[in-house]
Length: 121
Length: 112
Image (cartoon, rainbow over all chains, first blue to last red; front, top):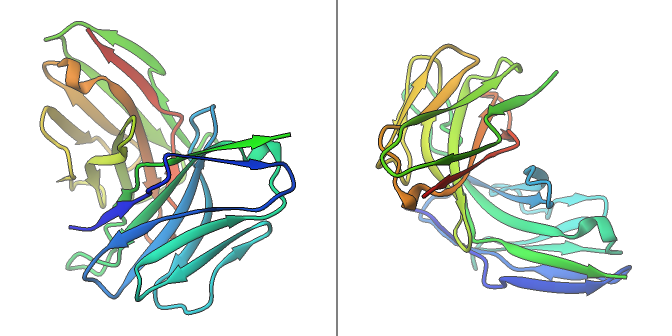
C-alpha cells in the first residue's frame, strides 16, 4: 500500500515571502499522480496543483509550483508571494494509476497528515 | 450547478444509534468516494464506487456500509455508531477522464 508523509505539522510565513511545504511518499508503482489540496477554515477541499509521474517537468500554477523528485519520492509545494488567503491546511495526496478490468482508473486518493500554514501580515 | 452536496452538515449521535449520510452530485460523474478526516491523519478512504452498481472497500471500511443508489447518489450508513466514528466525513466524485476529485462540504459527526 502507498503511504504519504507530511513531516511538517505547522509552517508559517510572512506575507509576500516564499514558503515550501514538504511531502514524501512510498510506492512501488511507476504510474501515478500527485496532488496538493488546500483546505481553508470553511472545510472545502480545493485542488491547488497536480503532477503526473511520467512528466519530468515540474508543474506550476500561478504562485504555486512543485519540486517533484521521482527517485527520491519527494513532492514539495512552493508558494511564492504568500498572501493572507493562502492560510489553510494543505494536504499532499497520491493517486495510483491502477485500473480495473475495463481500463477505468479507480481514482482513489491517499492523503498525507496535512500541514497547517499560517500567513503573518 | 450545485456540484457535490452532502446532508446533514452536522449531526450528534448517541452510541449505538444509526444514521445515513447522504451525498449527491450533479456533474454526471462515474466515480464517487467517501472519506473521513481525523486530526493528524489526513483524509482516509472508507468506501468508493468506481461506477454505478459497484462499490468497494477502502482503507477504513469497518463499521460502515454504502449504497450507490443511482449515478447521482452515494450514501454512507453507520449501523451502530461508536465514539471512534466521531469525525468529519467527505463525499467526492470524479469523471473517469478527469484528474480532479470534487469534494462536498463535509459532515461533522459527533458520537457521544
